[in-house]
Image (cartoon, rainbow, N blue to C red):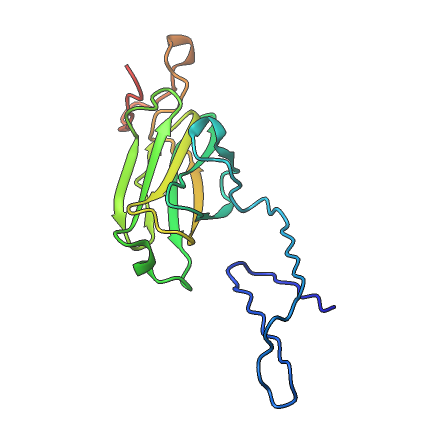
Length: 193
């Protein structure tokens, strides 16, 4: 029995049985094969095809994922008190961007509005980073590829920042008002009605 340990993902297993000393291939030869997988916390895990089943992620960590079948959609979620999110979507350089046909789609939602995305980019064939998006509470990230390529791999990273010249959530009541300095210009965004 021979055991191989595969560290990186994406290998194909080929079994060839040589029957004779002359190197001819065996016909009707039998073998056993066992493949074990180990869950990695930095890989997406199925079933995360709907936002209620989103994989919880930690801001600042890079995660890997794959489109495993034609209907696969991957959802991720994280929670942030206040600040801004930037979402980075990258692609495995070992896999041609041609394998994803017309590219990838990245959509970011706030739990407060799962209909109108805060950011959306489609038909991406190169790595992409969203603009800085104001966020508070749960944020959902949806990844698909336009024509649902199978075995298409990606990497995802969400980072948050705070900026003293941007409003900070939750400031929806005067008791939670942001302090400002006279003479400074501030930015803000209305997150919902």
